[in-house]
Length: 181
Image (cartoon, helix red, strand yellow):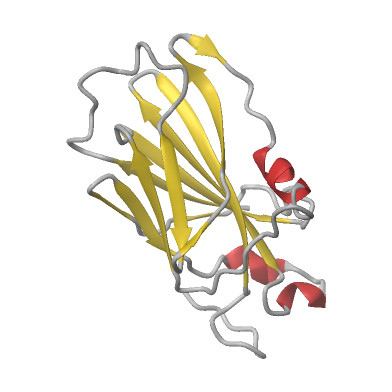
């Protein structure tokens, strides 16, 4: 299950498309003043095709070294580009198992509101409606909703993906399952 948000940033085209660089710009991803661990994967860069790794499994596999943070619903997530911002970006938000594997397929798509200003992309962490599809009661306990985010960015012909994982709740109201749009 993925939440998909396609953003086209106007006026953000770089004057030179990274011809001499071998990687996309670094980013800083924060939520509630906390920096989140992220992994980048190139899809294609400077005419070379790359095979992206399963970033979610890699991030979740590092739980012993780096715990996956719990971020409350409603918290703002900000992604700041430390370099030229992308021409366009698409955000995918899927539910995960704790090992980083995807919980549901992408048949149902939801759009998230987002803003891009001053080289920073931000959005509030909302309820993922597929979280209510689980028949496992443990998934409804506070902090047991695992979410994987992929921000796929383009700079001309160059494509890079930034991935991060967090834990949150099913809904804003604890102790009661409730759909919150």
